[in-house]
Amino acid sequence: MALRFVIIGGGPAGTQAATTAARLGAEVTLIERDIIGGAANLWDCIPSKAMIATGGQLMQLRHTTDMGLNAGAAQLDLVALRGRIEGIVDALQAGNRRLLESQGVNMVKGTGRIFDQQTVLATTAEGDLTFEADAIMVSTGSRPRIPDWAAPDGDRVLTTRDAYPPKELPEHLIVIGSGVTGVEFVHMFSSFGSKVTLIVSRQQVLPSKDPEVAAELENDFLRRGVSLFKGARAVGLDHTEDGGIAVRCDDGRVARGSHALLAIGSIPNVEGVGLDKVGVEMNGSWVKSLDHHLRTNVPHIYVAGDVSGKLPLASVASMQGRKIAEHVMGLHKVDHRHIDYEKAASAIFTEPEIADVGLAEADAFAEGRKVRVTKVPFVSLAKALINDDPRGFVKIISDPATGVVLGGSIVGQHAAELISVIALAVTASLRVNDIAESLFVHPALAEALAEAAE
Image (tube, rainbow, N blue to C red):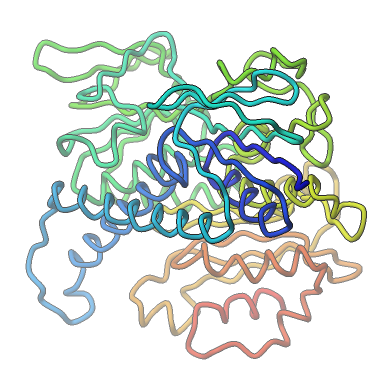
C-alpha cells in the first residue's frame, strides 16, 4: 500500500511537497481553505509584486522625456489594477491545480486539523472528512501581526492584506515598519503618487541589511519626497477629527496622514491545527524544535513555510516542501542535501531593487573574519546609462585566501535576477575567477558581476 501523506496548507511548501511526494509514489491529500498557492498568491507575494510592477511602469512613463519620448501623463486605475491582480492570481491557481491533478493529488477545500497521531480532520462546506496518515505536514502560513494599540478597519487603518490594492488611493500613507514589507509598500505607493511617511524604529531602513544597501534605498526615498521618522517606534494610533490618522511615536513625534499601514511582522497560523494536541512541543505560536528534516519531536509530523520559523520566503518554503517529501519517501537514505538557509538568496522589490545572498560584509567584520570585498557601481556600465538608470552597485564578498565566493549584495535594476549568479557561486563554492572568466553579454548589467569578481 502506498504511503499516505496528508498536507495541511496549500501554499508554496504544501504544493511542492504534494507534487514531489505524489511523483515518488505517495498517496497525497492536500487540504487548503482558501486557494491553491496560499497566502503567497492570495494576499502577499504575488499581489504585492504585481502592484510594484505597475508602480514601476508609472515611474518610467513619468520620466520618458529623459529617453527622448513624449508619452503624456499616465493615471492609475485602481479598478483595472485590481482586475489585473485577480487575473494573475486566477491564472497561477489554475496552473497549480492542473499540476496537482496531473500528479493524482487529492485536493480538499476546507480547514484541516490533526485529530490524532494518525488522523487528519478536514472541515468542508459539505461536512467533516477524515484521512488516515502515515506522515503529516503542516504548512498553514502566517498572518499580519497586530499590536494591541492598533485596530485595523480595512479603510483608514490597513494591514498588508487590505492593500492589494486598497479601496482608495491614500493621499498620505503612514507606513509603520521599515523591514522588507514596509519598504516595498513605501516604494509602490510613492510610485502611485501618494505622499508617504515611513516610521523607522532603528537608525536605518532595513536594519538587518548592509548599511550601504540601506543608504542607497534611503536616498531614493528622500528623492521621492518620502518623510523618514528615524529612531521612532510607533506606540499609538488615533483617528483625527478631519478623518485622518495620527500615529504617536515613543519619542513624542506624531506622524499625520490620511491612512496608516501596519507592516510589523507576522505570526504563524497554528491555532486549532492540533499540533499541541498530539504532543508536538510548542513555544507559544512556534514549534519548539525541528531537526534538519523539519521534523517535530513527533517523528512523522513535519512543519514548513512560515510555521517553521525559518526564512519567510516563498522560495525557501517551496524547497522545504520538496525536502520534506523526499524525506517522507526515504530519499534521505541516499544522496540528500540539507537546506543551508545562510545560502538562500532574497530580494526586495523596491526601486532600485535590492538582493543579497550568503555572508554580508558587516557580519564578516563583526565576526572578525577576513574577507575580500569588491564593489562596482552600475554608473560605470554602458547598459545602465542606456537604461537611464545608473543607480546602485554590485558587491561580492570572497575568501582572500581561496577566492571562494562567500556572498554578495546588489542594488539596482534587475537585482533579483542578477543575484542568481552569485547565489549559484555561493552554493557551488565557486571562485571569483569562475565569474570573472565567464563571457557575459555586452552591453548588459551582468557585466558588473564579472568586473566585481576581478
